[in-house]
Length: 178
Image (cartoon, rainbow, N blue to C red; front, side, top):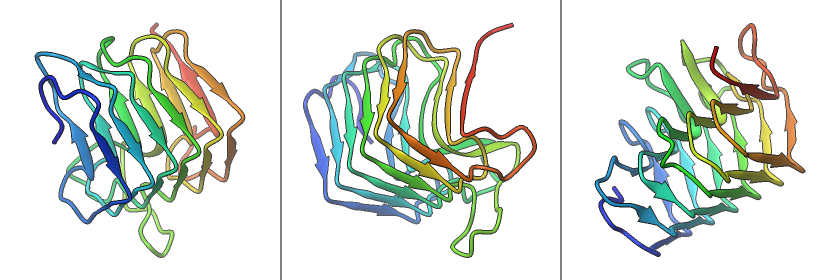
């Protein structure tokens, strides 16, 4: 867990796998969790998210990670390789150069998830300034990159393919409020 007021920490070159819930989790916080760097890690086979960003996170650099086969548990209906939300205080994250694949699928590339689970990268109801660049996102059960109810996000230079586990799945999906 990364909690209350954590500033400038670096998590690098680790393996975060086979956890019941999340590989790395920034939990809901009273004060900001600011300027964290997550780089060079493997996040895999976790029950919910490989990386989960909760409220009050800003200015994170999430780069050069291998994120795969998360969203393994049917206990969670909203899960992804990298997931952020659901609060406008989640802002100014730089997500780049990650390889994100087979979330919502097991090691044999078979579906293990249900509901809205198994996205590659999913920012849900977040604040301004989040950027998604140069990621390779493929073979996920749900949307490859899902930017949902999020303002002023930049999604560019990503390679996104074969995210097709269920009806309505897109390579890159952008949605707003009705």
